[in-house]
Image 1 (cartoon, rainbow, N blue to C red):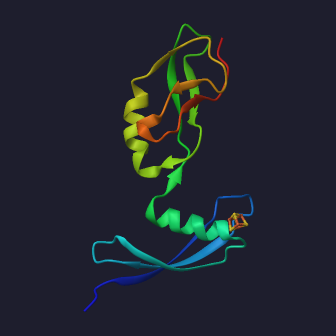
Image 2: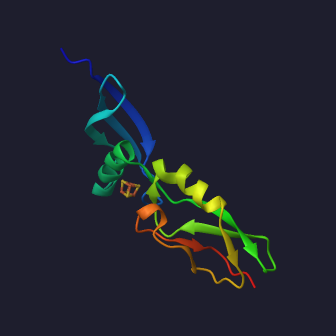
Length: 130
Ligand code: SF4
């Protein structure tokens, strides 16, 4: 006999500014792991279906934070990942980023840390610092 549970969730697709409200039926095992995304409704385009599956199996987010600066006219440099990385890696990434110090001058878009945690995504500067 299956002990899996069926759950209905609602969340917004954040892929584009329309932010469609998705209603997602998901099957979970007894330990809470997602067994299957059974249905997605409310999406105005196929990207919403893809977003729902991604959100329930491996949610992705852009990480934004700051890094210490040496020799600049600002003490902290705002940085972001160039693209979304798995949300599950954010804490580990923050542990790594907290120890960084970058040397001024820095230009917006400069790579502060390449291939963050082997994601193939760079951490980049979000502003200029002289
Ligand atoms: S489902 Fe499509 S239209 Fe709706 S927010 Fe997502 S990407 Fe945009």
